Length: 262
Image 1 (tube, rainbow, N blue to C red):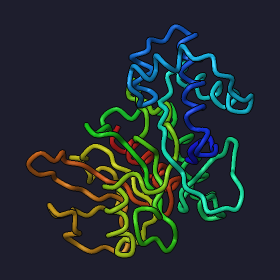
Image 2: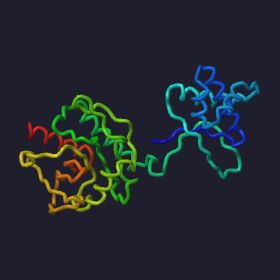
Image 3: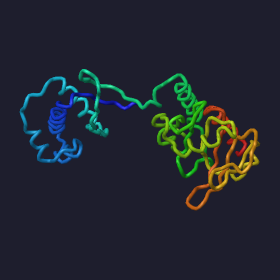
């Protein structure tokens, strides 16, 4: 997800912080908290809050937007951005990592993950919920690294045995699922994977399944695989992974598996 940034000239940074400090202080936010937010000493914050120095309207406008986000309990990080342009760049922008730019392939992957979520939404998945968070990861066609694999940031949100929401879809975030998918995708012909609880009665699912070794390598080889089973290890929860052509295909398999186990 692109990150929202405010760009101003370096020499104006002090005025921006001074403006934010004044606004926050006028909203009854303690100077000690302002000091923490702006990464300034408390004496400096006190100096800023008591200053009557006139500040330009454009800086005050940016300060107001940032202050509103702080008041709304959003985190704010102040970092320096170095540009090599001939002119100063000012304003509100969105900056994305290279792998997050929505090319046609990236858009298809994120759309497929959203479709998978809507198929899952509100379905009772009791008995299939692992102790760790459930997630779905889907890779690009010629994926080589984790940045080529998209997943739900922080996993899927589950309330009362039902998947109800997610925060966002990002590339390069689910390290475990992406590494497992990248290591196995060419061997099992899969582009998507979802982790669920270990299935003891896997024979009832009427699917093609294979066991993983402790190091997550395949114990056996099958031309077609629907479920990967890992028996766990010391400190590692036993787990099952549903794999498929894409995220929607994985969710369709999950629904069929659930029906077979009920």
